[in-house]
Length: 412
Image (tube, rainbow, N blue to C red; front, side, top):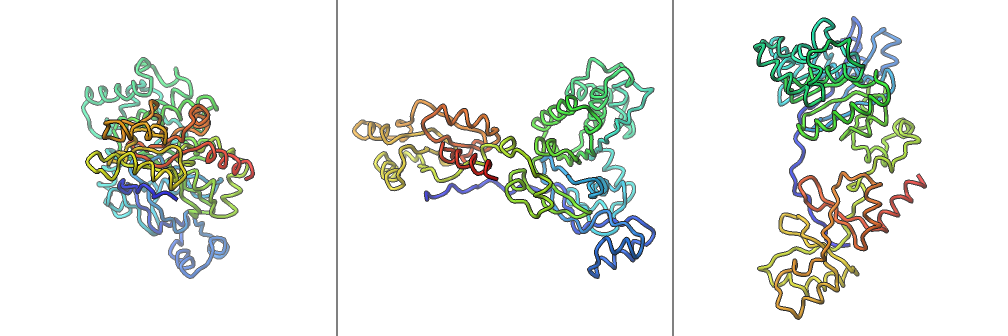
């Protein structure tokens, strides 16, 4: 196998760290917690004490700038968990650390300040103020925070434009459709410019068309603004469509956290496997899920004579390759060479590998859906290099690799 290109990007930075978080509903939480520490199950706790364990020893991290989806069946604990993140309900034990500070230990004043200025929540119900205009509803959070009228209306209008509602600023909520009302709810959450947004079944009351529309709005805004979003959903298609990572819950427990591909390909247990049973995985796979680093890669170092045309040809011969990728020292793809294009340069007064590059410079973003990848692979005779958001090489897709992946999914 060819030597692999190392991933030198920095590890993702955590925005939220949840450690050993518990929530017991009832008047004897200490008794219930002691039973849990003694190894008793939540069902036995309920039977003996009447206490309901809503969240059981949850631990995970949420990265800055990602959409983190909480999923599970009704009663799994996902809505309780999201409310523990901003302490709408008090944790029984454990910690919720946001930007290095434990929300569970914050004073009331500090917690209110966090909610008003850096953490917003969007609920399933639109919860708009019926006697206030759209712009007044959007600016409500800033009003609570004490921002002057002109400034809060200016900021609200900017956000209403982002969600496509600036022309409805003076309308009343009753004059809007359900989808438009939910956009106002989203605008209200965005107007305070939070770095962390909590969304509890935010789109579930909408019809399928409006729901997809709101997902599109959210993903567009996320692409531009890169907030950290925790999104509760019971809809599998929604979770796979918008989530960078998904957290599967069952009976108050966190069963598995991972990307959609991680969970689809490597379910933690039978519960997760059953949860995703029947999902058309090809619909959600992207180029980075298929790319492999077995294609020959050669670096363009003009000042290093050992990396000339002959050396490149020798590497290709050793690994039995007809094509190779030329990368610069930042692992960016300069282009593709073939054995033929390299041979043509050997006896000519050319010094750089880039002189042998084929005319077509084709790269595929790692986020490209598999159906689009298929069209590209058919179109070009050579392997296709896949790059990350920074343009760095992460692997290659060949017809053989893609066919094997598709056949594996069909058999599964």
